[in-house]
Image (cartoon, rainbow, N blue to C red; front, top):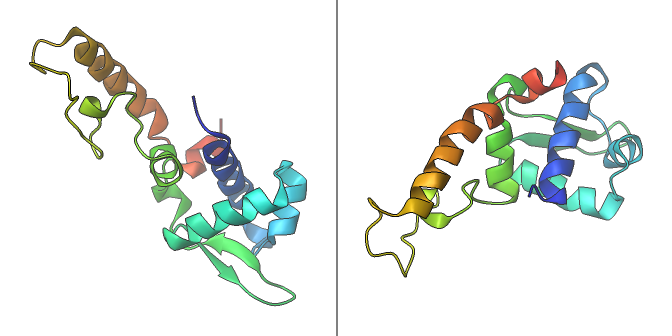
Length: 136
């Protein structure tokens, strides 16, 4: 299941993209428009800033805007930043691979085969950019 943090991060980026002509946009404005608890949003914005997705400007006209091009930011990027691995089991993960401790042979493991298949079908869907999501 997608965490609330990841969902709110994606909603925030879509909001910033759709209001790019009004950026920078304050955390308060994002919070109010997207119904995201302010303190929760601040932590998400900090994480997106630390990962060079967004940058912030201080002052009366301050707020957040994109550091990275929204066409180059995918849902998979955001999920990995906020939640970690996308794969549902560690032996299937492309970026966070770990061998399952009880596994005798990954090549014959039926569970692994199922979740590899799921990952292969899921990644193209999640590789949509923030710009593409805005058009859905």
